[in-house]
Image (cartoon, rainbow, N blue to C red; front, side, top):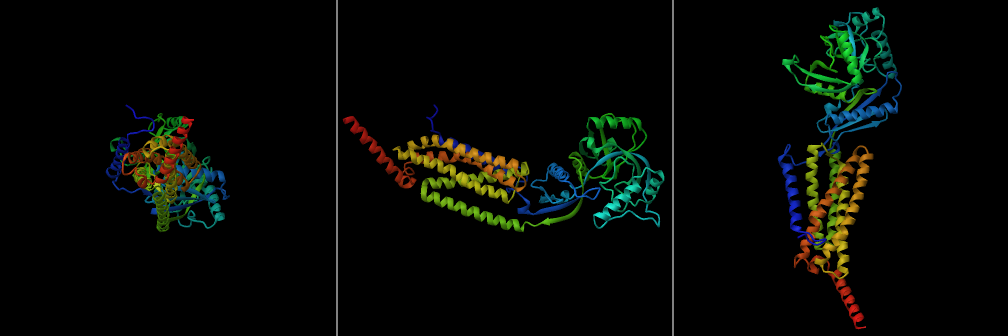
Length: 519
């Protein structure tokens, strides 16, 4: 038979909580790498910070719209590479990528424009050093004016429609020098360029298929039986792109199609037959890492701007560790003050409060470790601040319950009979308060950026786990205490003053009832 309203079987609830904790820490210690530590953000473990400086073809400052679009694309690339705890922020005309831990080398490649276009090959010749007396390609210019001049000169020579100028460009192009046209070529004009290895020069027709028609891309491991001894990148086109690709390959069997990434020819395969399936494959001197990088940047879109990597630095965790120590000290002091207050004011109930806070902290820690493994969640200083704030929310739930319990005892009920009635009246308040806190954390998480998201996430998670502890631990422990002869003593429970007031109220009501009966 079910217990009356407000009555529970405390042993069953505590057993459920114990099973949750055992299962949680079994996953912590016996899955993944087995290290019972959460992942830390860059402010706690160090990492890499890469600063990208935007440049435009006309040398003018980039627009806010272009910078914001570039930031979103790079942020998507970061997420696609599985680099957790990273941030992509704007700093004037720069984008700053901050990556914790070991993802620094990958972060340095995120700023490439990754503009893949398809051009038909007109001529291909082996690369060689430019003849004596010719002016090689400019490797580096000092200042935006000189840089723009180099781009204009390169366009005039290498994107000319004059065949004589095109032949001159093939002869004088130095494949070993920095390319000023990188990310600045005109897709509507022919192009003289080199392959990525600097071994071949090409004269290419205008772009017949832009890279924006790529729907998906993925790195494919070597398959010698299929004629692919190295890593390749597989492309799937959108519907319009698939039609253009099918028409081009049908009309150009025996010709070469160049896959041009940021002005460099990545691959220039010969078309042996019409390709009607809406896909293509890029081959080249790829390893797993380079093929995966290329597939990811193509999958998540080309940047509207070209970027120069102006700075890449290793970030030390020294300052973060000092801040972490300060934060832990602040949190410890706050927790001690809450514990001392509860022990002085509630006595036995204060001990139950401290025990519940400790158990809540244990559950939170286990969840943090698993979230770091499963979804890449990283703990930073803002997240720790969220946990410290959550201590107050958790303690508030206990206080609501205990004060309601006192109200019931003041009305003349015993400790044992007051617990179920107090819980029935208090749990609605606890649920409402935690729902408001969780809703605030959720809204903050959706609207915020950067580390504020970490604060909102930990605050919301702690609020949910607070309900688990209050329902499965605090309430059952108070119920057990009320049924224990020693613990229910007013001198032990800390309810002596309230109990005396309740006895007085009960006696007053009894006397009033007797007087009314005699009258």
